[in-house]
Amino acid sequence: MQVVNMVLNILSLAVVGVGIALSCTFFSPSAFLGSGSGNQALGAEPGEFNVPIVPKTVAEEQAAEPVQSGGGKAEKTIRKVRSIYEPKNNFLTLTIPRMARIRHDSIPTGNGKEEHLFRKYAAVHLEGTGFPWQRGANTYIAGHRLGYPGTQSFLTFADLNRLGKGDKIRVRDSNGRPYEYEVYRVFVVGPEDVHVTAPVEGRSVLTLQTCTLPDYSKRLIVRAERIAAGRMTKS
Figure (cartoon, rainbow, N blue to C red):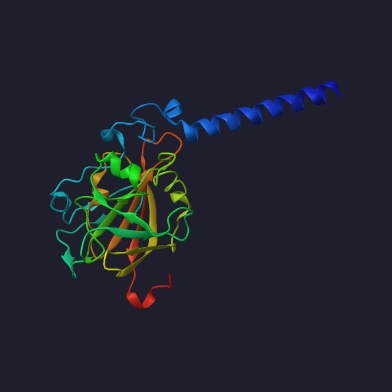
């Protein structure tokens, strides 16, 4: 009986310890992640968030060259994209039914050093990448895996790993025009792999990015292809 009680006491202490650790991770992540660990830490400097800075010539640098990423099939990138029309501004509205916290979220455009945008909004469209109204574009959106408590960024992309082939991603531009995408590929790349921001030959795509777990050292990439208006589901 004493042995049973001892085992139960040890298990209870272990459960309490795990609970405290999880609470600290959510409400004081810097204590666990440290500086420069993937930039989910509270108070992280702007340059520490694991988002690529897109070179202006990224499409040309990658033009017509097949790129191998994440152990998957190579995709060719293209040189130019073409606008179908222009909305009143570049703000996007993002909805992902499969994810818990992404519902009609406003998405601004900014670069990887503008950490204030990643605090204020659920995610950010990466400057230098395409928009949904451009044919052949790669619309690249990045967000925090953990984020900042009390802000729109908190846990917004925590469940990005739930997305798989066939899942839908819905976007609206500032004029209210809808665009729908279907996930066709999920993979992981390193922080130096800026080729994932380039357009993809023969496709109009949307790319979602967040940090990997548990160490936030790499990028989880979800790529979806735009589907024809006739196939779009009702919101």
